[in-house]
Length: 179
Image 1 (spheres, rainbow, N blue to C red):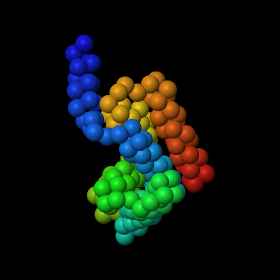
Image 2: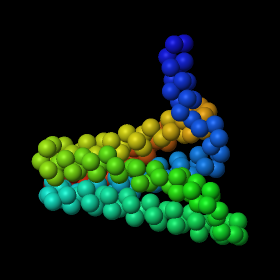
Image 3: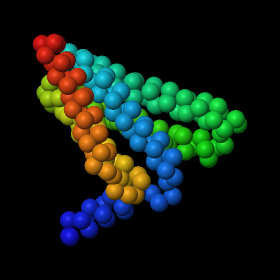
Image 4: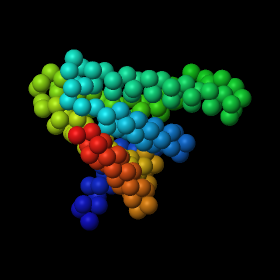
């Protein structure tokens, strides 16, 4: 019973009660998309890519450009769906809802910079970044629960695990074929 109360406080406390179901879905979509894009960017990186901050710049550039493209696409999609331009408040929501695309790359960029500066081993940095992204994908069910302020289904939790497994398979093939 005590564990359930702690979990409820953490998950439910962080959920924004004013967040609409549509906004929660937009943020979840951006979260999944951002993690997949950053993971796909990480997979072909090698230790040599970390020199001079190349790997970090690549991940940052992909994250930032994908974020901008995502916001732009959402604005165009809104215009088509609704038939009018977004208000400032609606534009702000689109910008905010797409932020998970951008934030997916933050920890990997920091780790890649540390590896590029030789403060951490290059291979460990790449592996650590990939594991971090896999964990983010595996925990998608908890994100759904937090944003929607309701318990996620076992199906949602399983989907996150399957997404992480699929991404891990890509990383395994990369490692097997690349070395």
